[in-house]
Length: 508
Image (cartoon, rainbow, N blue to C red; front, side):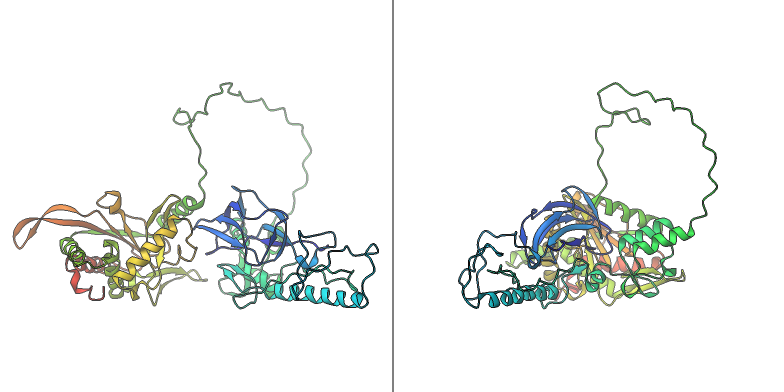
């Protein structure tokens, strides 16, 4: 029987280097098909189901629920159905093309005499079935999950298994390929080194090089098409290591004095505060991603904040009027999102990103379109889904997409693509009952607009004191891409739209 094919945990999006195994959907010995979900894993972005690129019998599960697995490490081993030996049997014989059951007699010398012609026809039929299986497995379905997919295919694959023959095969079936194909390997490792066209590396190799200070731009990959492999980084580390110093004479060190051990069975005590430690919670998943992104934002972005109080009475009255007419009324966040996209068209500097080039210089990257992210609180933590092509949507369409993305994010089913790729973020922290906040920019974006709660406040209208519905808008922006004039102009544009909503809402 051929060796099982090993499926490595793929890069599930945006260069993520690890994922937590939540649950297995299959067990050892199960028969699985191409694209069948085999496990649920939780990345720093979302919880996703991983489909198998191989069909066959599950030989081994590499990991237990709760474990954190690195991208590029084994996830599951699958024995191809076409390579199973005669000792492998199914509960029922496989059907023949004419819907009659195939012979379930064992092959070999103990088999009764077959009818004339069976010895010649059965081997050819079995070989043909095995070849069909191998060709279809090689073709795959073409389905892709962010960083990988079954090669080839056109969206749908037939899954034909080799039938057990009534007699031994005239010639052994071709052994299944136990190595990843070139297409599989390149699909799994699709992160290019800037300025080096042929060097493609995995997130693990990139992280390893970064931790040890290895310049990937100066390496020549030993893999297919110049692929930089882990062994290339290890070789660079060995060549850079200083020659070993002469071995010093061995001196027996005195036995260490054991530290006193606490005999109390109670909880551990914190040395700094003197308080008992009640719990330790690992920082992982969404919380780990949020922490890393916020720390990077604070350390890299020279941010500034401007804010303004806004009279939202007209917008509230507009919504109430639409409700009275029986219309399907978008939420307040959808209206404000519509104003934000219009403002970003007028002030495109806030819909950009800062990138560092190979020579260390920086560029401002502008986009032909707006992917509007919005902060959504979930049981897994704060996530930022993004509405793709938000500038093309009306207030009603924005409302529908915001509600859909919020629901899939709270269910933990949002894809990495839905949780990434934003170009500007809208944060409605008014739902938490607060008036304002100096938000942290969602790196690598350059701006985030916060909306506080809408409450009754005294306001001067036409020289008269009145009670109005007032909210506070707060804009935090990257001072590298624009100055206060641009930031203030954008903030004032959105504020004016809230105070006079009918000027921009002809398409709702």
